[in-house]
Length: 461
Image 1 (cartoon, one colour):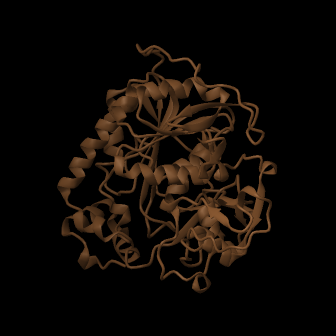
Image 2 (tube, rainbow, N blue to C red):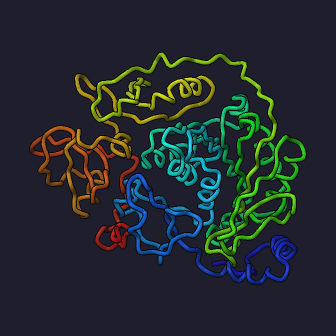
Image 3 (cartoon, rainbow, N blue to C red):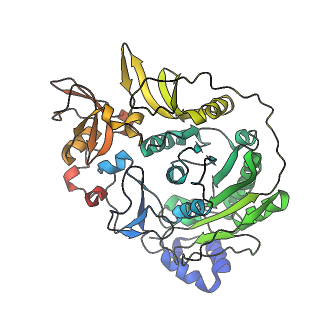
């Protein structure tokens, strides 16, 4: 909780000019604890079984009555839900309004790590859409890959490229989401570092960076396509001013999203920009700004680069893999992809720094396929091809710690460990013991976290 005395005098003055008579209510809200919220994975759990308060603008979002232990919850590790700030889930409302689930689209999440918005997009988009989930900062890509694998959608490509690289892919994406790097004013209530690093110069630096990002990626958007711009900050410089400047210099319009049934969402501070603002003294969530631009230019500019055909993708004999999938081998790993996306992915590999795509099946070790953790997380996996090791809570935690002292009554060979029908990962039953193939980088490592002492969300499933 933050006292007004901890805030920069310049920030206080900025808020007073922005909110006028509501400024004190805003400052008072910073002294309250932020809410905790989660978004369920509709491909893995039903969204009607949680006895918590629903988030009005996201059909899969829920406020928790308090902060539970996520590290010791097997459902968290299975990708059954994602811990996400409630305000940012308004992206769900926008995507539903744009009806992106109605037909296949190419979607780019440009600044994606750690994956909150990308997992949300993956849950809303059409089954044959392709999502490119990108992170420009190399050190943040690992978390993005882990979260996208855990979420279980194979129609995702994870990349580590800058906005300019995408800008060379002319008219490629139907929807681009830019959750722009910003000064982070909306995170002051729970992020001391964001508050400490704030200064007026940072705002100006962020504003210029945001303008550059939009300029760099704009050519990648198809005519008639939508660019969704968001920040977690309050000032106009990084929000309305950035968009107003961009509209004045490009063929686009500010696109209105109906939010008539949703209370306490604040409008834009510029009558030429449709925007949706979240303030902690009005809405149950952190600070957030989001707006939509539609590209009006009808000019089709084609890329000069030659297309690469999908010759490296072949038919497969895996019974657990859908017949509409093709497979390829990359760095020794066999990967399955929706055949509709094979050529698109081949092109991306030639133009971008691609880190992951499709569903990783495994790698050949001698005469045997060693299955990859990603396969066990895939929501469309034909589970009838594998035996299961159904674990109680204590053994599930042991498995997530990488332990092998777990009783196994399943058949010999490769099996999938699961908890309450949620897949946790692969193991191999050797008869007298099991080999635990839960990835080392994902294991619960903190010895002080004792399972039986933790309250977990999946108790309510």
